[in-house]
Image 1 (cartoon, rainbow, N blue to C red):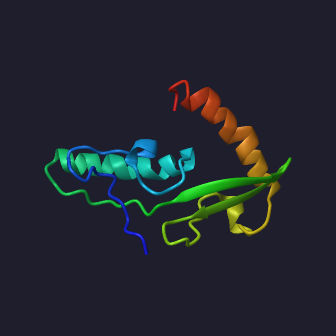
Image 2 (cartoon, one colour):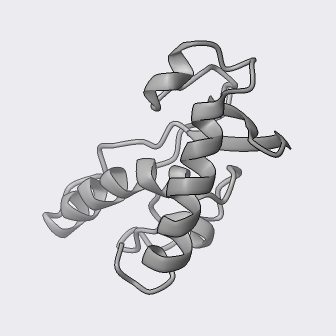
Length: 122
């Protein structure tokens, strides 16, 4: 079992991080950052109020694995490798390729990353 993370710096408790700079053993995806952001914000507010960080990141990772053109296997899990399903179509069966996962990755996430996040709009 892996410890959950507070996303607080180990040496400097007034520094809160997320994403690639957090140095945690998870995938470096926007889906992971989406789950880290509310935890980092909550813990930053705790630190600013002089309290201990109270929220922990469970290591959520989302790996869209492209198996063929038009086919994606969407794997969502936590530090303990337990399923941590957030996208509604994943409720069907994460062990099978899904057309909806392809559409999410190709038609939504890719443009959101390249035209939104990289331009600082998200």
